[in-house]
Image (cartoon, rainbow, N blue to C red; front, side, top):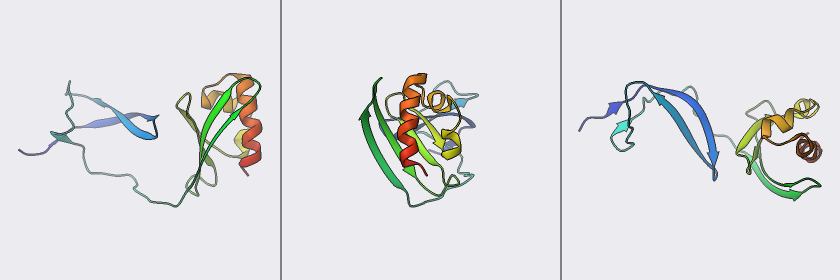
Length: 126
């Protein structure tokens, strides 16, 4: 059986249980069977980099928070922060922490919870 290639446009990256799933929009295919089809082997980048991963859980006045922080040099010194309760993430630096309401918006929490997360991130992101 020959390999069939599917034209695919990446539309969403979804984090769930620390695995990454790529949800693609297929133009001429109604079903996709991973065992029979292969995506085109073309990469924009495929880099390996040392990183420091930190898992932290804490309780604030408004809620409990479960975060994963990935420190690398990849994003100009910014930190990848994943809220494991809402499955939302952002690439956050010290400049982003100063913007009012940004952390709440990017991590999918309300304003009070965003302020508590921002207070914690101010201590660990430099």
